[in-house]
Length: 109
Image (cartoon, rainbow, N blue to C red; front, side):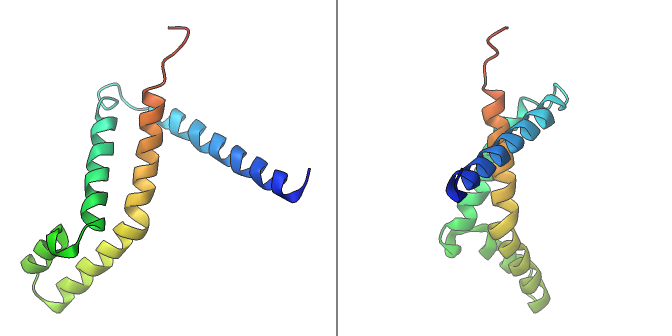
C-alpha cells in the first residue's frame, strides 16, 4: 500500500473512531437530554451564523456597547476570536455527529 493509501486508511480509521466516540457519548446521555441534541445543534449553527455574518449586525457590536471600556473590548474580542476559530467549529462538529447518530434507525428494533 502506498503513502496515499496509508493516509486515507488513517483518515478513515480516525473518522470511524470519532463516530464511535460520539455514539458512545450519545448513548451515555440521560434519556431526558437526548431530545435536546437537535436543539443544541440548531443553537450552535445560529451562533456560527452570527459570528460569520457582517459584524455590524452581530452580537459583537451589542456586547461592545454593553462593555465600553478598553478592557471589556479586549475580553470580548479575545472570546470572539476563540469562538470563531476553535470553539464553535469543534462544538458544532460534535453536535452534528451526535445528531447523525440520533437519526440512525436500528434495523433490529
